Image 1 (spheres, one colour):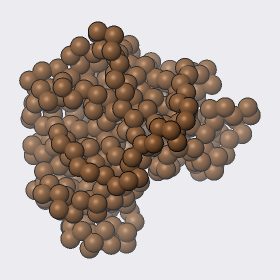
Image 2: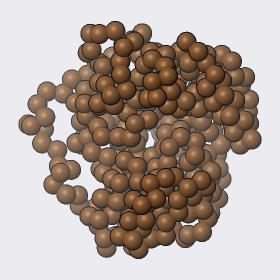
Image 3: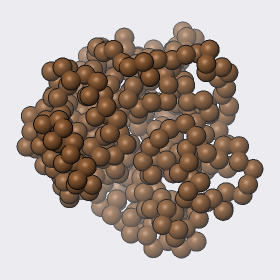
Image 4: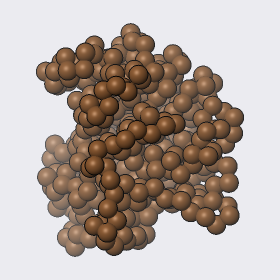
Length: 369
């Protein structure tokens, strides 16, 4: 039985992870769980699973430090997942990573620490899980440092739903939080849902893929796929391309991260009916209408803590948009301003990463359109 520490248990990913554990009670046991707030919900889950509950500031780090586990599933919001991720790695515990910002803000630090400790860093995002599944021959050798995950890889292609405004004819200036939170394919937390609407989440995912699979950013593409059935593709040097398909259900990649390198049966809801899906379509993203993709690439080219600034500024921008303080189209403008204003530092130094994060948040909070 695999012992799990679940961080961010009351969020969207955390609740889906609980569903996976309920489906396989003989294979998984949640030994501890954390939540930043929602104490009542966290305590109820802890009672259901016989787990220790940690709630409040620093809860995730305490859950990792005080419990032995086989895997830590990090599903917290923003950079709050960095400290517990590093703590799990330092304990030699495998990490299933659902928090994009950990690798966006500190990818060099986290992946170097994982390699040094011989720790598996397993993707939970559906797009990165798809790539990982297409690379299984490589992964069997590469996860423990015995080979390269990127061996024989020509390109990675991440698919994007396009969000709720893909074909919207109206001026995006007037988009309301309610409209931005109405995602056509996925049910997610508010932060990642707004990031999907701006396509910043796809920019983040390019940066994640760069670190997870050791592939240069110029070999990572994005293609819009509104049906959200093909989750990503890997093209190899011999001209072959592999794709992973599944219904748009986060329980599929969560379960794979928890069972790797094996698989377990899944409920009927996880079965894909291609005839029912009908036509699957693809198109290039519109980076003029959705400039956050370009901002992510620019931050990566700057190097150092520029992607830390990208992540922190976006988090503040989304909060301000949801609070009605700025417009939807101000989100990329605010982020671009932070990238200009905050100087870059060493992206492998934890102190520099945390300092850049603080300064970016202050800069983003004080920005005015």
